Every structure is written in structure tokens, then in C-alpha cells.
Amino acid sequence: MPTLPELLHSLQTLQNDPLAHAGTNIVISRGNPQARILLVGEAPGPQEDKIGKPFVGPAGQMLDKVLQAGGFDPEQDVYIINSVFRMPPGEAGKNFRKPNDAEIDFYRPFVFSFIEICQPLIILLTGNVASQSVLGKTGITSLRGQWFQVQGHWTMPIFHPSYLLRNPSKAPGSPKSLMWTDIQEVKRKFDSLQ
Ligand code: URA
Image (tube, rainbow, N blue to C red; front, top):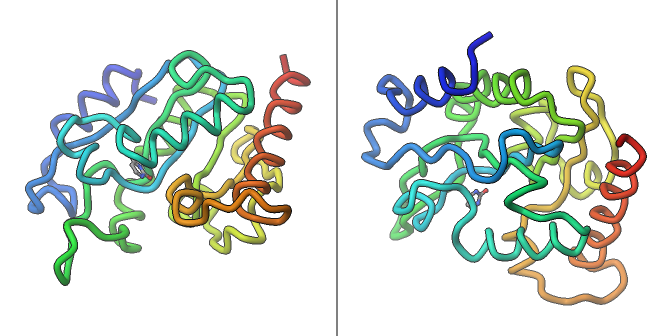
């Protein structure tokens, strides 16, 4: 198993990955590598590609609000990575797109290296792409809020923060209210595992 600096170095010098030709930057992680929660996102967007850190755009601001609502400090209590480490370039007038299966498959071993090195108490998977990468399952509406075991780590799929930005209602049963329920459950589990 590589050390964290070795893993970061192999990502920083990656050249044979399917998105290397896209001309986008490697975007690896933010937060605290010693944190007890590892959060896996989808792929960098334009702001992340520019700055070189995951979740620094509008989705990242929403993510931080969700984590804070659960009583977590996004910089201290969580280490944040993505399922795909470069921004998939856009088609049809858009500047980015969702990662495809081949891209998710290529970067999966790196995601699992982070899990093995960081040994988090809890893994959070935001949305379908992270659930596909780590659990091999999609269908976030039914997966969210459930606990799974991944190599002995408590793992929960939750909605992607971009989905909350597109669905701002806080009504009972809305994505935002379900996210509130899920982050409370994550906090309950986190406290019970300390
Ligand atoms: N969405 C993600 O899933 N990851 C990012 O880094 C930014 C937006």
C-alpha cells in the first residue's frame, strides 16, 4: 500500500489517464487527511479545475453548509476527494459533463487507495457517480440514508449538493429535508463510534 504522499505524487504525475488529453488539471483533495470522515464527490467542475481543489464552487458552498448543519467542520472533520480526478470536458456547448463508466473505472483504484490509507470511520458518497465508484450501485433516491459496509467502513450515500442547489424547497420530503435527516444520522453514528 502506498503512503499518502506517494499516492498524492502518483496522482500529481498521472499522464496515462483518460482525461489527461482533456487538458484539465488534476484536482485531488481538500480538508484534513487525518479526519474520521472521507467524503467522495463526483468530478471537478470549472472552478475546481482552475483552483485545483475539490468542491470550491457553488456545490462546495452547499456541501460546507450541509456538513456544518451536522455539526462538522469541513476543514477539520472531513477529507474530501472525488471519484474522478480531472474535469470531464463538455459537449454540446457545455464546459463540463458527467464522468462516463470508463473514467469512473480508471480512477476507482485511487479512490480505494485513499480509503485504505485514511482508514476513515465513515465514508460519505455524494450522488450516483460516487455510489457507482465505491459501492458499484446507482439509484441515489433509494440508496441515500442507508448504511453499507465498505472494507469495514460505515458508508452512506447522500444526495449530491448540486441536486440541492437545483431543488431549493425545504418542504417535508424534499431533497433538502432528506439531506437534513441524513446528516443528523451521520452525526449520530459518528458520535456512537468515538
Ligand atoms: N462537484 C463534485 O462532485 N466535485 C467537485 O469537486 C465539485 C463539484
